Image (cartoon, rainbow, N blue to C red; front, side):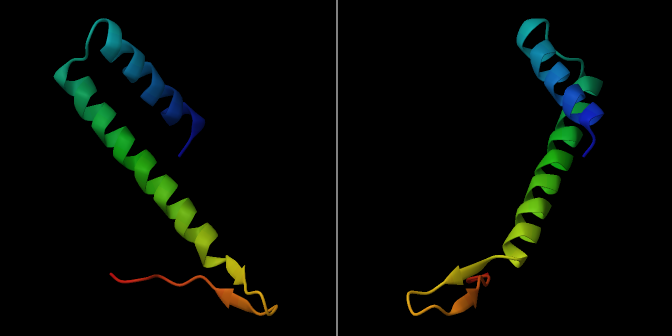
Amino acid sequence: MTQEKIDRINELARKSKTVGLTDAEKAEQTELRNEYRRAVTGNLAASLENTYIMTPDGKKRKVTKKGG
């Protein structure tokens, strides 16, 4: 996600609080927010892929996905 897109999300949020958004702007805001959520989720998943838990006995255990 580029800084320009993040700036646009913030600009639309400010505009929605003051004068309101057109239907096209609402659709753009929704798409940008969804793209931002996907980027954050992807970054978190990538970080967790490289995360280990150190047990009290000194062993490293890789973090795994639980459930479904």
